[in-house]
Image (cartoon, rainbow, N blue to C red):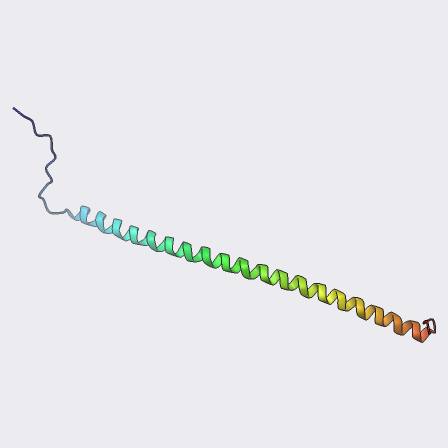
Length: 91
């Protein structure tokens, strides 16, 4: 005699608990997919913000350099005026 060890699926209707677990599992899977999508969007936003911050740093650095050059020009001009007023200028 041959034994049949194959599992025969139950023909019973889903129990309320099984139905609830399937529903919760589906909701959880959907929520996880949404979280992955949001995580991707956040990562993209972070990259864009980092790029913008780097551009701002470069801009501030350039403006600082320009202001420093302008300050030096004004100092030289002010010293030249003071020298002229004191009569120590080279004429």
